[in-house]
Image 1: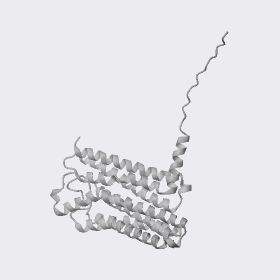
Image 2 (image 1 turned 120 degrees about the vertical axis):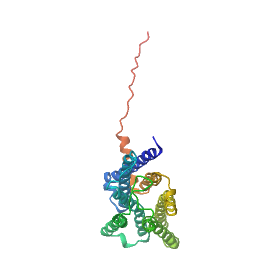
Image 3 (image 1 turned 30 degrees about the vertical axis):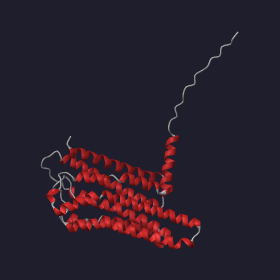
Image 4 (image 1 turned 90 degrees about the vertical axis):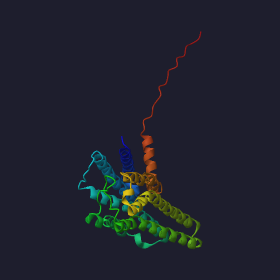
Length: 304
């Protein structure tokens, strides 16, 4: 088995693991929907749904790469650019869902009336979905998501610097700047208003600020995982022929690794989901069959 095939199998395994984790995340929320029917849990499920669809798309990409690797001159199917479009859209969906999580905590701490009504809450989520599935449509419509020359995968054309910078700014830079601004505003607000609230209110505000800090750390984790892709883009801009053959799949594996740990952290920092997971674990322990050891009978003999 050659090296690209080994990497491709690892890629399929990581994508399957992410898909299973996201599916379990959503199944837990549906199973305990009477407890998890609130906006913070909905936003966490929004992130999990993005990971689920992203992982399903990666499984399709990995399967097609496994098929194309068998041929010396592989041809691209008609759905290859569509899978590339879905890849970029779901990546943006995952990152932008962090903005909504931080905005929810910001409105809670500052007591902003932006997310008071159910219509405004659903509207902000739907607007995020519309943006994530429309911002990369120009690249798809203009045919700028072709098959890479160095691997059996479709991706945004790396030689068009305008498309690359635009999609990177819309997917990653927008999230980084937004989370930094929200976090700094919250830190300044808590520092200035600490003398105006009692101890219980200060504890709740510090707890919400800790959640925002964890969201920023989760986004930073994804950013660090995407640094190799940034290096690849810089090399492509300088000289295309410097790229090793079938190297893109290694970058895909590295970018998919943080998703499962991210879902675990997201579940633990969402109180209703965490409590549901504990209750589900206790129920599994309760229904686990108990092995009963047979009791040996002891015969007593009378002594004369």
